[in-house]
Length: 125
Image 1 (cartoon, helix red, strand yellow):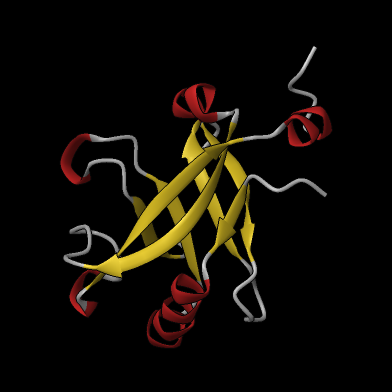
Image 2: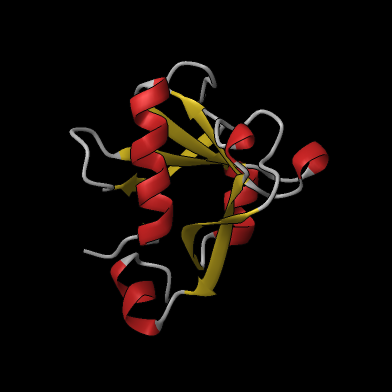
């Protein structure tokens, strides 16, 4: 199965710690403005998705429930040919994202989908 999102081991480890503190989590890939284009991590229910959001997939970080990843539909139009990997590095987290106080910040690494992935997702004519 072709996936649009993945997570590094380092990010998965931090997500397990944050889940222990905050309960189930989710991501919404920010489209810019105040916090740039950071993946924003929220406790489930703190950020409400709607019909204008696309679920990119879910991250298996070794918990009971995977961590779902969303993006606005308008932003997805620009990113639909891209695979995203959620990673973590040292630095100040985004103001509203739960990793903010940890001294770490989530970031998105991206690459273009390869031909097999494009075919599997029905994105090649």
